[in-house]
Length: 119
Image (cartoon, rainbow, N blue to C red; front, side, top):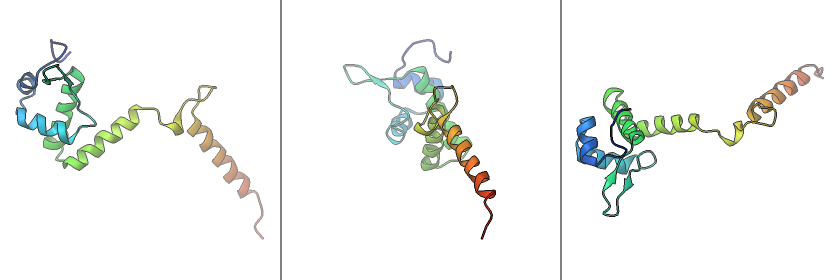
C-alpha cells in the first residue's frame, strides 16, 4: 500500500507525490474523467490510493513520457477501455467472447466465399 491513511488531503497528496497543489488541482480539472476525489461536507478534496496512483501515472505520462495533455488523456482512455468489458466482447453463455464468435463467423464466411468459383 502506497499510503497509510484511507483518504488524503490535497496537501498530503502533494507531499507524497512531490507535485505542487496547484498542479494537482489543474490536473483534476483536465483529467476529470480519471481523477475525482471525494469531498468532505466542507468541500475539501480527499484522495484515495487509487487516485494518488492515477496522479502519479499522469505525472509519468506528461513529464517522463513527454505526452501532451490530450495524448495522456488518450492513453488513459485506452487503458480504461482495455480494463472494461465492452459490448462487443462480453462473455457469451459458453464462456467465450461474442467478438470471438463474430470473428469466427466472418472467417468461415470468407473461406466459404473462397470456394465459390468466380465467373
